[in-house]
Image 1 (cartoon, one colour):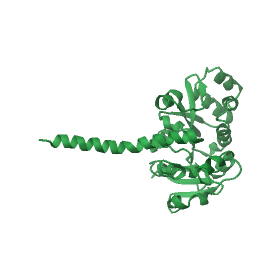
Image 2: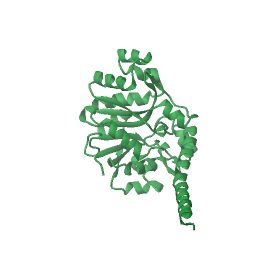
Image 3: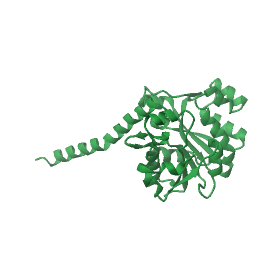
Length: 279
């Protein structure tokens, strides 16, 4: 068991009520994907990630989420809940670094239905040595695997990138970055506004695509007073969260394909064993 705390953002956001209601649940985190509520799926992945020692579910009514099918989470000793307030930045900022969620902290979302332990571990390894880190996935990686998915792309000198809903807060200095992170997440669909947070010089270089993603992040962090790193991930599915029905349809197809892999591997192994034992 590792020493990282995972904070899972499971609160309600404006505009999500209709999506949840269409699936007969009170919150988007409870929408089913791959046969279980997304929140439970994310929690299982984090419990299986070697670096994660504890998990905190952050929501307006977090305890109420851990009922019914997710009652197992309420009795899991590595899972706790915390009450969110007004705004992601303030809620995460109040929680990160406390005895309930000591550093280092990984922040992700309950709608990250395709999250896998290898994504978590790859990102954590790439986040070492800074105060704050965030994950991105390059467009070619995403579209090679899922050409029909629609993402919002941040265009830089070394590629077009989409966010992966993975953030790391590693030190007390990361408190300077929580407001930056919240604004970036809030405006992740509005690229030009997101770029203005980087400062005028970096903004102009980003708009003209003469600066790389990693260099832009490093400059933005330095300007704000903390060490910031962008961590590109090689996993296409890390960029796919469930914001709308088409995302859920895609996630269901991917999860079904994943579930079929062990059965196919077992069948292939049985066939090979039969051939080797044939006279």
